[in-house]
Image 1: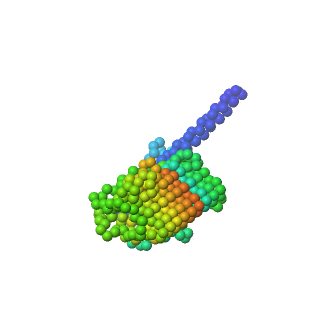
Image 2: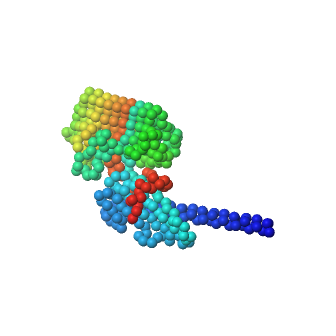
Image 3: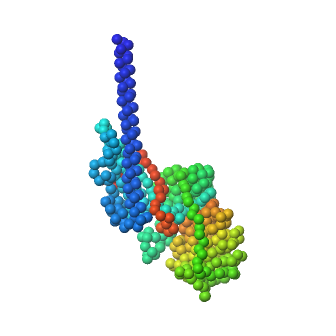
Length: 455
């Protein structure tokens, strides 16, 4: 009898263990199903974005079936509209989706909360996912390096929006501390530890993303956002290790009509010059080997029309040099674009395109083997640099208002880069990219969206 009782107790315990294991396995299965349903909700939102951005479908049509608020820039929808998805074996699921900035008024955020119920009558399993999106643009980040980005001695990166209403007819908003934002994102493709490094009071008011390596931070530095706590100064939630970037191959323009330049420009001048010829409204200038732009001692180059400067035979030599208070003044709504395989130096109190928008001054580095771009001593540039094989150096109170892409990027001695978020609408490479995917696991994270998902 004792033996039978022992066997009976063991069997009961085994059955209870088996039952518990079965329930846990079932709950785990429901959790995986809930994640899949939540992903379905995210995909529906991405489809609406794609219709609007990539296919040019009117906003109201692309988001047809969603409850939209044009004032709050939000959209909501339940999938399916009623009932639930039949996931098999008596399992039913549905998802609520909330979208911030569905009209791209600011950074798009999509949150999907899925609920899945099983046949056993146990409480439903819920999963909440959040993704953040950005346009696929050449200028989607403030700084992008192939190999490294280093900040030292009070160097800073942050952002602002020069065109908040996306209306070219209204005046651009100049950068100031009052409009400063935390989208000064820095990315490096390299996976080595220290590919992004900060030292001596430098800071990133945004995110730091590498191809897999550790971000090195030493000497009272900060990586943070508007919602980051005061301590620790390096907000680990703003560091990611899954950064990747495609560097498109540049094609130097070959217009049917071009103005050949056979002597260097060294004096104050305006473009176009008398006798210059345009092609489709743009003035192209091709510089012969050994010739470039070299302005010093308060000389000014004034741009009164869209112009393109081309340096094709200047590997390893200076092509565009500014020093001693020399300036480039680009008139409103005009532009200057530079294609060069040589080196560029701005040194000593140069103002480049100041007062205009960054999209109106572009530098494209075309060297396949390497080139040097140096900005030193109180230089201000409103513009963009795309030079994926260049070493870019900013020193001594240099300010870049725009965006930069290089092989290596060094910021030192109070140099600052202020990323213009409006550039995300320039050089559009099509559609949106996911900059962050996260399951909201804590109550505090989910609470931020509870009111928006309660419909």
